[in-house]
Structure formats: C-alpha cells, structure tokens
Image 1 (cartoon, protein in one colour):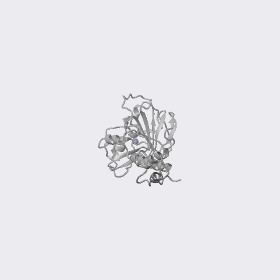
Image 2: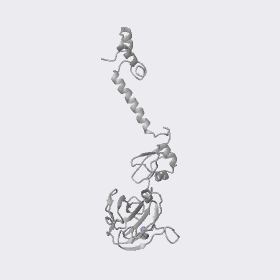
Image 3: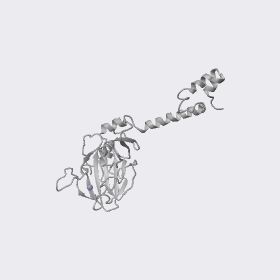
Image 4: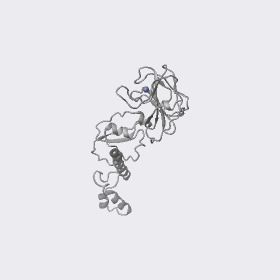
Length: 272
Ligand SMILES: [Zn+2]
C-alpha cells in the first residue's frame, strides 16, 4: 500500500493517531524536495536518509582534520621503514604543520599503510630509506667500547678501516671492509632480530640490519644473497648471508658496521 498523501487524508477526514504520525513524516525533510511527497514508504525514506548520512560521513573522512576541502596536496601512504622525518624532508614540508594537519601526536609512531596528507604537494614522491631510518629512535646513550662484545661476522682481512672524518684524499667510511671469497657465509655478530633484509638502500646492495639490545645495530652489506628475512630472531653465529659484491663494491667483501642508535661506531673496537 503506498504511503497515503497527507492532503488526501485531510480531505477524507482520516483522523487519529495514525494520521498525526503520517503528518509528522510528511514534514521536512520527508514531505518536501527532494522527497516525492507521499510516494515513498516510510522504510524507504529512512533508508534514503541513512544513505545520505553515510555519504556525508564518507566525504567527511576523505579529508583529515584541520584541512580545508579546497587545500591542494597529496596523500602519501607510509611504506616499511619510512620515517615521518624522512617523508617530510622528501616533500620539503614542515613536520609540525603536517603533524598538526594529520592529527599525529607521536611522530615516531606512524604505521605502514597510514595515509598522510602532504599539503601543497602536487604528486606522490618516492621516499628513499637510509640506514639511520632503521636504526634511529634510540636515544644517544653513553658508548662503552668492549673488545669481544661482538664476534667476527666473517673470517678475512680488513681491507678498509672505519673513519668518520672525510678528507680530500680519503672518503668517510662508516664501517670496516672484510675481504672474503664470494659465497663465504656471513654470520650474525651477536644475537638479535633482523630488522632489515632487502636491497633498497643506495650503494649497500643486498643488506641486512640486525637489532641487538641496548640500541646496538650491526649492518652487513654487499651480500651476494641474504639468507634471513625481516622480523626473524637470530643467534650469535647464525648464517645470515653470503659474501658478494652487490651495490657499490668493486670486489667481493663484507662491509660491516656497528651503530648505537644513529651513532656510527668503530667495529674494530668491539671485535675480539
Ligand atoms: Zn665499506
């Protein structure tokens, strides 16, 4: 039975409880444009209204808080190992402003897959990852050098030592290079968890980063092959890779670094 027309009810003198209810539903927004008066059943009207509410809600979600709907920008979707600092630096935008716009309270706690609105950006940019993006986050604590704190990751001759002060003759070197034949097993210098196993960092080739306790990280680069996956726990001495010359390497060797948070340390001061 179609919803009765209020005017027909009025003319026919159809009075009482059901009439007053019909009168209520004939009022705005039910009884006027865009609702065809008296032609929709009550349930249909409620469903239509619900759909409008849902539509408005989804439109509201499309823009984060504090962003005008006419503000230009793009959404950057956070990928693994990308830090908030690196994303903002890549786009050349102010960290505080982006945090405010997106309602981000803790800048160290962004998640993979999270959408971050970058105001003013015209296109989505590729955000490069650096070793410090993986190892940062730990506060710079006092470093105590300790011979034998780590074991040698591979047997071989040290062909390039660690030094941080670059000169005209000598480039900065963030670790030590240990010469070994291609395919030689690379072993975890201490127990920990694999936090990076990929080849997305420029120059490093196939790279593994292991996190140990107390903000210590060890880095193994130029591998022919990585044998462990991210998030996997490893024990000291476990096979994690094979020596190679991937990335910026002229011959097969292991480039090995030790870091505490973002601080570069001389591996030779921690090896036996
Ligand atoms: Zn090196």
